Structures are given as structure tokens and as C-alpha cells.
Length: 93
Image (cartoon, rainbow, N blue to C red; front, side):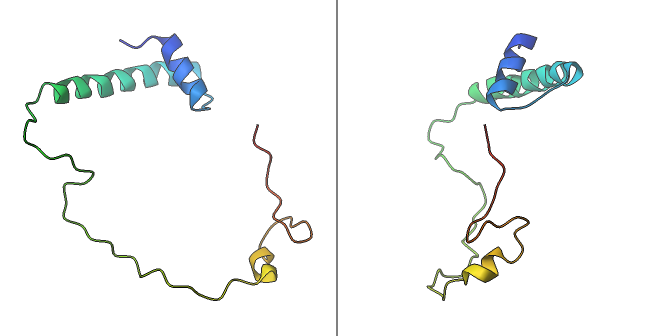
């Protein structure tokens, strides 16, 4: 079982501000995830190729082709607080 201290540590690493009730709920959810991982580890997967997606999907995006660049004025048009020719964004500590 994951302790509240471990949940707080994980939340801190993820920069999540969780309340005490969220810490308790998250502990139960993380326990369920770890239980599922244990069940998966019990499976015999010899000969099973690793895959990121079990579905046969193909890239549906358009080909990447060079285009004319966006003029600076157009890029800054909807910026809430442009500073001369730059975007102003909140500082991340």
C-alpha cells in the first residue's frame, strides 16, 4: 500500500497541490494501478512483440511541406500582452 507520505512526494514531484482528501483518494487510485501492473507482470508474454498501439493505424496528417512564414504582426495579433516583438508569458518557478 502506498503511504500518504509517498503520495505527497509524488504530488510534489508532479507539482500538484492536493488537499488531504485528494491525497487519500489518490493513494487508493495509485494502489489500484500498482495492483493492475502486478497482474500484467504475471502474464507469459514470451513471443509477444512490444507495441505502442494494438491497432493498425497509419499517419493521417498531411505531408509536411514548407510554407511562407507567419508575419510577426499576425502572430502577435491575439497575444494579450505583447512586448514590442515578443510574447509575454507568466514566469514558471
